[in-house]
Each structure stands twice: as structure tokens, then as C-alpha cells.
Length: 310
Ligand code: MEV
Image (cartoon, rainbow, N blue to C red; front, side):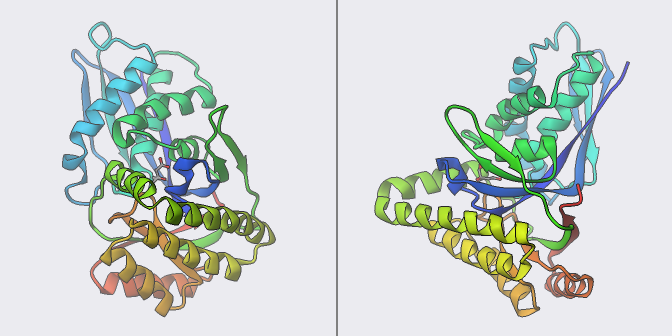
């Protein structure tokens, strides 16, 4: 008996954090995935062989344990009675901001579903991964697990009565560069900081939320028209909003500016912020190379990937 499952890594193109409060956001799967394998064992074991930003796995160990418990509970699986070994691998770097936790939750749920012949649908996998995400995030919006489950480029809105998500169709895939600050960031803490800001500076938060809402509709139009220059400008604008929210960092701002100086159409932090990763829109191959090289020259890791291809 064996079970294998995979989950996509993701980037958020627009409105991380705002999405927690019901403002629509746009996110996309990237070509990298986490793969989980489930094997028979005499005791429960989770072996994490994913490539990582140094320190990430150690720092997330307790959150990962909590997440694993929640996944098993949501799937009604008893590891005392039916122990298994779960092995995590794949080419998605375990790092902050690129949906590593969500991708692993989806991969694990899929692999367990196959191993125990549960035949779960994607919608069921998505709900289980959402429960797993609570171990990492506390109050996740659901955007990460949704992209990790279905892939593609999606419009996502959190709603009490059921989240809305729709695929956005692109004329063709486009290239981006993901720059890794090398800093492990705590999404839970970032979400908490924003919550405090919302309570302390209500007017400012409301103004930023309104602007973020207007922006994301325009961004969807620009993506559908394939007006990548406009998409880039809106990414810059969104980065400014996220800075005002207080979730950027010195390294993120540095990499965003470096990308723009090297010709990127737009650049912004992606995911929780406070470290983790940023993205730069670089549709042409030579531009992607140039931006990636500039980031690497400064000693940071990059991932050259595409959006709209998976
Ligand atoms: C994290 O990838 C995205 C956040 O908006 C949190 C969430 O949506 O759950 C920061």
C-alpha cells in the first residue's frame, strides 16, 4: 500500500493580509510543488526532506506538529491504530511567503487519502488543508490552501457564507522572479501585527482597505487584458500599501527596489511579509535573467518561474 500526493507552491500577486478581512486577492500557483509519500510503519513518523531556507523547518517544528494533528483529526485518522510514515519532499523550497505550509498540508491530505482509499475530492482536500493551515497561521484566509489544491491563477474572496474563488484566464503564461530574503518569517505574527494596526489605527486601515479593493479589480482587468505594464504598476502600488500596513522589511524593500532598478515591470513582497519572499514581474526572458542575476549578486537566492502555466 502506498499513497502519494502533491500541493502547489504559490505567490500572492495582490492583497495578502487585506484578504483576511474579506477584500478580494489574486494568487497564482508556481511550477514548484511539495510531494508527500505515505508508507506503512510501526509508529507515526513525519520525515521532512524538503529543501529549505536555513532554519525554516526547525522554527516551524511545533507549528508543523500542531498542523499534522489537525489534519489527522479532520480526516478522522487514528495513528495509534494505523500508524504511517509520511515523507515530505519535492522542489518547493520550504520558506516563508510561497505557500510552503499550505502546499505541505495539501500534499499530506492527498497522500493520506490515497493510502487509506478515502477517494476525497479536491474540495474535501482543500477543507482539510485549511484545518491544517490553522496550525501555522491561526486564522488563515484560505487563499493559500485553495491555490495549493487547485493550482492556476485565482481570484479569491473570504466570505462567512463560503469563500468565492474563480480562475482568471491569461492569454499566455508570464515570467516572474521570486527573491528570497533568507529570513524565516512568522505569518501568524504578521497577521497579528496587522490586526493590532487595524484596531489602533482604524481610519488608516479602512482607507488602505478601500484602496486595496479598488486596486484588485483593476488588477484583474489588467491581467485579463494582458496589460502587464499596468499589472506591474499596480504591484508597486500594492507593495506601498503593504509597507504602510507595516509588513514589509528592510530586505524586502531592498529586493523590490533592486528589481525595479533592473527593469522589472513591478515588484512587491508576497505572502505574510516581515521577511520571506518577494516577486518581480519580468515577462521577457532576458529581463528575468537580468533581475535574477542582480538579486543573486547581492547574495540572495532566486527562483525563476512562470505564472499561468500550472
Ligand atoms: C499568507 O500567505 C497570506 C496572508 O494573507 C494570510 C492569509 O491570507 O491567511 C498574510
